[in-house]
Image 1: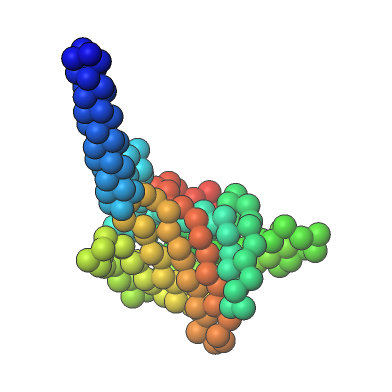
Image 2: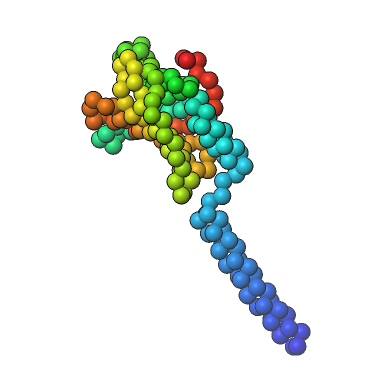
Amino acid sequence: MKNIITIIVCFLMGIGMASQLHSSEKITQKKNRKYNTPDSTDMKYHAQALAALKDSTFVFNTNQIIFNNGISTSVSSVTNFISLNKNRVVIQIAFDIPYIGYNGLGGITVEGHISTVKMRTDKKGFTRYEFYANGTGISARVELTLHPTNNSATAIISPNFNSKQLNLNGNISYEQSLYL
């Protein structure tokens, strides 16, 4: 009888310890979700994107466009980009529609020179890169915001002559553009 009681007590203690261990695992998982730690690959891409911004030589490949009214559309990152090479910029927007646009792709491509470059990083780690693009067919303020843990970014193109701004989502890569 003593053996059965001993076994039952050990069993109950084991269950109590297992539930304590399970609850501590849940707390650890919750902390990891709260403080989402990026993996080393994402941080490598972030470092490359940051270096590209500092060097003013990058391509921002767009995969989503959001219009003023909040409607968004997915687009090809091959034909939608902002390319910067020191002081020259090419902005190309091409929608996947059957109509031929100014650039032959259903959109527009504009080239220009940049001026008034500002780069700053806030307390949360978001890096904002702002410049003015001026040239044939374009006069706009462009603001890129790089995410603090990877190379994903958003861009806001605000034309100087109207209020029809475009919001773009995509990734920054450190590469030379074929167009510059």
